[in-house]
Length: 365
Ligand code: MG
Image (cartoon, rainbow, N blue to C red; front, side, top):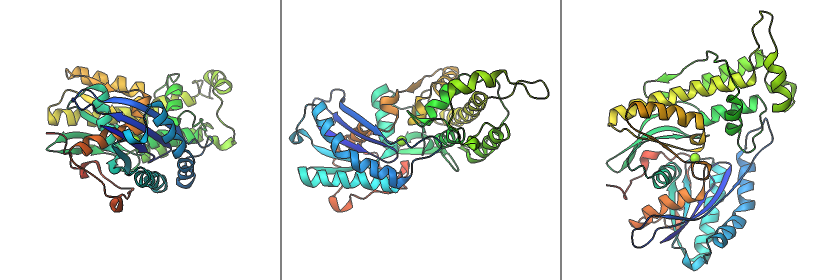
């Protein structure tokens, strides 16, 4: 069985094709193509511009994916698309593209929950059968565990997503959005040496990031490290000079790298804490990290230390699979499709709010 998956809930447009062999053998990735909309440094991606990007690229990506998979339209069994959650206008562009293909090709639609897509992709790639899942991205922050045909949410952010906190701090520092603001923060954080004390906001099983962001933004401004000058951040030009600068008290001045390092250490520690509590609660030793922030090697390292202390493992994937993509939608879509799930054309809507635990997971025991 072959499914094509269309993803466009944020600034990545992804088209992927998955094969589920009839003999029950392992699923195979036949194509995984992505095109990212990147605004200039200091700016975030706006819904209307992102939607325009998706509309401009979707046909090209679908054609390219079919070519790469060496398939014709007749080989495709179903068209899977992201129903939500995500940004309204980008979601709509992709839902309309999916509907158009459904009518044009005469194939059935499968609306997929984006978060469930991440979970199923992560489970397939890593082979982790029943881990506690940490889903961390620009739009989502959730600790999830499976029970009785639902992915249950054990903890989540009370305000902005952890990835949004990191991305917006990149904007404050005017760090480039290419290839990804969070990736550039991660590289800069590796050069950081001093851990600054910033708020730590775990509330029970939940986290809060907006106050932390406000705090570190004002700290950056007070140090003259924000983008108030209007100049873009230049790693080579800024770093060596900054590192030796000394303030009036004779202490070395904090650098952008120190701030990125401190921000990462603090917010990742919060995520490790709530994930560990969920693992203790459900009696699981393994943790799977999915979503764009899941590529961060420092987060993987910190989570790995905790999991090892509990006698377990951390499972994570690289950017091909953890950053939003089309195959995760095809993968989750095919699992549902095989149990008889269909999205009729007249119900092929999309929605900005679609919680992970709203989905009936018919394909698991
Ligand atoms: Mg995502």
